[in-house]
Image (cartoon, one colour):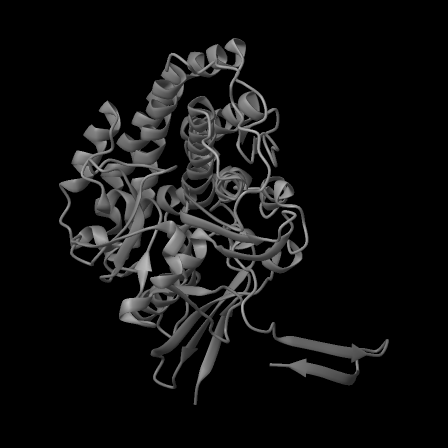
Length: 473
């Protein structure tokens, strides 16, 4: 006989999901799944919209990472214009995208995962949150809030809004950077740089406390995918889209325009979230991971001084150990440091205040693909338009989706190791949730359309008695 434990909802993640764990009579975990239970559907209701509306519309997919969709969407629209984008506009887009990464990583590390790391996986759930963390270490909590604030302030100073900005448009950005905004951002750099260095000093010694979790938090060999520069350094806006194997060896560089030759999209009946896979290996053997863990397992160096030092220390860990998704936390902190240094570099470029920030044109191509690195990994927007520039078809592969198979497998691995069905304790279940938190999934923006959506409608009377059921599988 099989018994089922349901964790609903999974807490301290962005969006709505649940976990089911199947246990036999001996108390052994026999199966487990991560379910994404919401549907966004932007692929379908963007059809018929003018392509110039797409960046602003796509930013509405999510309130946590709107800039990521704004940038990827604008890059797809650039291809529809088929024009050369001003260099200053590209630089400003890069700064905005990096600021998004900084604020989102800070949210993940300090608000969502640090309560587990600081207070312990078995701590009182009533205290295991940002407020409990503040009681235990007020300065660390304030530092996390400050890092996120910095990222959001950069977004606001560039685009005029912290959430859902419309500043990135087809052909560039709508307005140039002002000297006042540049100077205000640069003035904050020393403070947030030091905060990030202090955060790394806080995190690294904790690794030894979580050796058991490291062993089973989605710790298995997979391929990795992400952007990288030709010299092997980190890139988040316009690098080479590369896949490496489970040993870190180069497999293939992918032209984003031809991603469909190599990236397939499967669906499972337990989730609305698509499961992308590497086509040459098939499904599910073509599993890969994206995001900061993938990027820093691929990169030879970061490309900025302090981040290079931090990455070198991370790389001193054994390659097999770095397969653990627990190290998403570590790599996020390194990327925050890189992001702060990179923002400083880009703001000091000589043409950063140029007023030439947008190329003007009408639609010149019928199809466009935009790819960038979001905080959670590679983000892809693909549009087709008619002769008037109306969207006829859209495909979105969201960063969280790339990790879907790894999250699902990680839940099973963790549950099998920690859960004893004869004596279930809250800390056991929290560890199963915590493996999902390592990926920092953004479920609010991850589910779109493929195939036919399941439907279950119940008609009940005022007493709750079911009168009729309509179901489509």
